[in-house]
Image 1: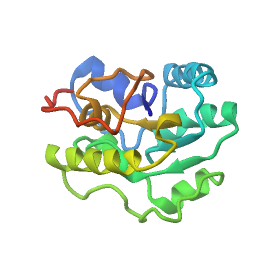
Image 2 (image 1 turned 90 degrees about the horizontal axis):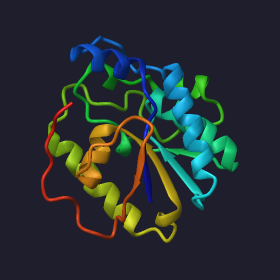
Image 3 (image 1 turned 120 degrees about the vertical axis):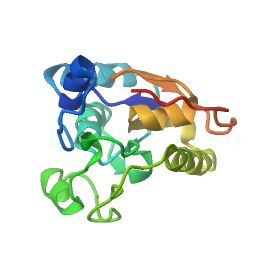
Image 4 (image 1 turned 180 degrees about the vertical axis):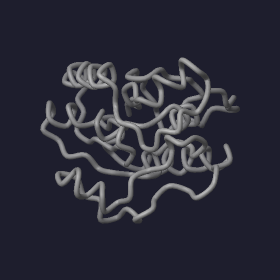
Length: 184
């Protein structure tokens, strides 16, 4: 499968400059983030993608949108691939608001509040990544699936830190990385 980190968000822009949480809840993409999403759409045309899975965070949905349009595919919303809850940007948008703002997507399986109430321990994100790895390994189409996700989740899946708008391949049938170093 391909794991794509969402494009640059308003949070990423400010956090990178200051190394402090700017207090932006469920941030949207910046102009650069939209350009990164569009560039990913162009690249994914040649990758044989038949399924798209995205995190319910707005930045992931905005990143998935031009790809889904370019490929003529629906986006499956899956909160398992969300970011580790550690900053203000990891407070999500309620499912009813997402359904209103993104009527082309199905949010029926999403709890109204789908993000944790308190900071998620690293082990929680690692556990979600391992669960997702096992679920994907059981699917015959895993190699043709694009997952639009986040830095922490991709780190847990691969052991690699990926910049905004970048992607890498991940074989869910191989063992998970041996150790994870959390740093933002």
